[in-house]
Every structure is written in structure tokens, then in C-alpha cells.
Length: 117
Image (cartoon, rainbow, N blue to C red):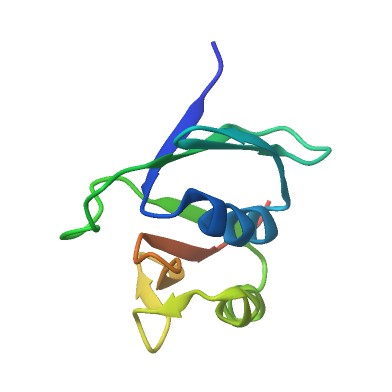
């Protein structure tokens, strides 16, 4: 079984540029209302951006957690790519830290401190 993620978007071509840079993915191509991204030289789920007519409304029921050793460094890089911080300071809960962010269309995601191994 393979996992593919589908993200609704008003403009999947524009959003594809953000998520490809954010995740280190490659844009495979587009057809009609869809743009497909795949991991560039690594394993991971495919990401399909699907054009929808409506704007995002309310909180996402599912969101991405990007786990990295340095959350501030990645959060700053993602802001330069067009993301917005939704939490000014890192949230700390149960010895975990994360920054809540939104992509250029407002879809929430978190930049999380990677667990030490």
C-alpha cells in the first residue's frame, strides 16, 4: 500500500511551487485540475494538488507536520517562500515544540522539533 496526500487548492500551479520547495519534492506535471509532486530522491508520499472553486474555510481537519532539528530555521525559510506564522512563539506541550504555520493559500501545517534518536 502506498500513501498519497491530496490537498485542495484554488491555484494548484502556484501552490505546487511552494510545496515543492518546502518539502524537497519535484513537480511531475499537471493535467486539468491536478498537479502531482513526488519526493525528489527520497521516500515519502506523493502529493496531489487538486483545484477546487471554493476558498479554504475553517481549520484543517488534517495537516502536515514537518519534523526537523531546527524549527526556527525551517520556519524562517518557509516564510521567505510565502508561508505565514500563525503562532508567534513556538508552542510547547509534553516536551514537544512546534510552530503553527499556513501555506500561501492558508492551509495550516506545523514545523515540529524532530524527536532525538
